[in-house]
Structures are given as C-alpha cells and as structure tokens.
Image (cartoon, rainbow, N blue to C red; front, side):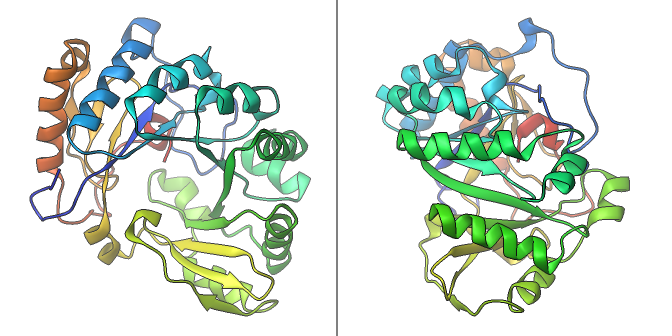
Length: 311
C-alpha cells in the first residue's frame, strides 16, 4: 500500500513483549512491564499479519523487548508461516542456543542479532551484565540450524578501532553481514554520553581494510552497504540522514497494540481494541497509520521508546 508520499509500505515490525533480560545503556528508560491482559495475544498478532498481507506487506519482523522471552514464541512463528510473509526476528541472542532449531522448524527465515562488542568486558558493561559467550553460542546455534543471520552493532563512543576490527573478524569467521547503527536520541543522558556520528565508524574501518560500495535493492533497508577486501558485507545506518526517510517502507506495532508510523515522530494510533476486533478492523487501522506517515522524521520528537518497539 502506498502512503501519502508514494512510498510502498510493505514491512511491519511487531513487538511481542516489552520485557528484556538485558539493560543496555543506550536503550530508552526501563518501563514498568505491561500486565498480561494489555499485551497482544498470538491470535491478535496473527490478525495483524493477515491484515498486513491483504494490504500488500511482504515482510514481518518480531521484536521486543527481547522476543525470545515470550513463551512458546516458536508457536507464534508456526501460526504466522502459512500467511505467506517472510518472517524475521531481532534478538539479543541470549536464548538462541536453545530456540534456534524450533524457530527454524516453525518457519522463521532469519534473525538479526545484537552484538555491540566481542570484548567480554565491554559487552558486559554496555549490557549491564550480559555474557558475550552466551550470545556467540546463540549465533552459532542459529547458523547450525540453518537460519540466515545478520549482526547489528550500535556504534558508540566506547568503540575503538580494535573493537571494530574484532567485530569484522568475527563476521568474517562466520560469513555473516554486520551493520553499524548510529545511536538514536531516545534517552538524553545516554545519548549525550555515547553518541558518535556513524561517519567515524567508516573512518575507523578504513584504518585496517579497504571497502567498496555494494549496490543493493531498496528492500535492504536504510543501510549504506560496503564490502571489505576480505569479503565481509558491512552496512552503516545513520538516523540523522533524513534523506533516507524517502525510502522508508515500514510500520511498527508495540506489544500493547500501539501503531507507530515513524521512529522519529510522536504520531501514533492506539489500536489494541481494533486489532482484537479482527482482520478487517485491523486493516482499517493499518491503512490509517500508513497515511499518517510523515515525509521524514523529526529528531526533536521523542517517538516510541526503544524498549517498546525493539528498534
């Protein structure tokens, strides 16, 4: 379905929980977790995906919080698989070691795993206690299960050239792409302390490898992609380059049924009851949200908290 500016909106991200087992420093403030009755049921999420399919959407991504904290998440994937959309997930990877095979068998097409550092101490500090060994075990389990894996790294003032090199070497060792993501202005204190322009990530990469631009399709999202001389696909995502907004193709739905047309906008639709009313009503609110999408984001607007919509 086309929005008011002629963009084809065909990608929907759905948060299945607001809970997370990590407390990353750059994530927005920790919310009181929602009571169960205010969280979308699997049947409600199926309504969203069916409605999205009818509107021409092609891809759904399950997010959190941490989506693997949602009990029986593989059952949700199995429910969504017959609808016909490509099903993906963004996760911190902690629970992938035990869930990769069930998720693959249920029909999950791929996972994006957050990996900010290979260095164990820096990883523990940025996540407030996480063990990078657990995440790496999850990544290897996902690869063994047959899932397509991508890495997401939030680029911060903590990153050194050596950190970047370690991440690229890790990506090379597993033959998986990695994307460096510019920090968004969601939490004022952490943003001030951790923000670093994504252009510096490119400069740091240039200290140890040559990169050539890779031509990609619009379906590859907002990243600008390169290939290193060792063959690693590397993406860079800048949230302050609003020219990328003209390629935006997505909607986001929080775990309590709020639809967000844009990450950097205060526009939203509280659609919990409409989603529960069935596929037809859900199509109406998704259509309304698509037409609400602004021409570009506004860095001065808070928009949804990261803990609500998982990126």
